[in-house]
Length: 223
Image (cartoon, rainbow, N blue to C red):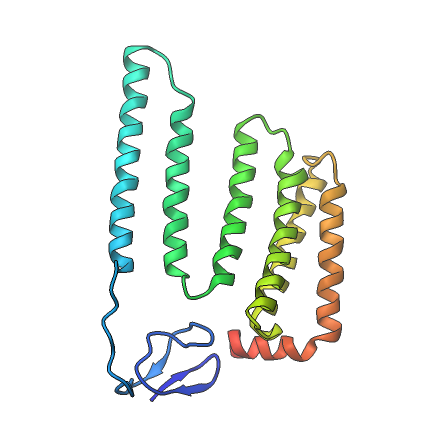
């Protein structure tokens, strides 16, 4: 019988991951109660191979265009780096979605953090206007919390299953203090409102949902 060390439950049959937390299982698998049916369609490995080939093809073509225009015409096309970066982001997003396909919360949480990093990089590379820290980061964190709560409610998940995501978002949201202290954010209202709302929400969880925090810690960290 298989055993999940995080959820501390025994699982019958032959499972690749825990059906509750999608974590790795220990123990010996058993024969399934019902015969397994072959799954039609394209496997995840095939999708990875095809997407990787398409990604490399696009990158090679773009690099060739960049070289030809700069070598023959002594100029560069400004959209070529954007295509190269965009293809890399799409390929990375696809790999993340396939790897975390059994955990939707983890997918859009990771995607939100990637979007924040890309916003900051684009802002810095286009003149450091500060729009990323002024508007995009606070709006992304606000949308992330709303999406997490809505998805948990619609999916009828208990708070234990996604409370760790909310607390982690609170910790990362506090990073907005750094651009304020460095005077990179010249309009601090959105960031301050976002951090204030997150702190109030986090303390509400700590004060009124202590039991859920303990259960979530025992589930995810074996505490």
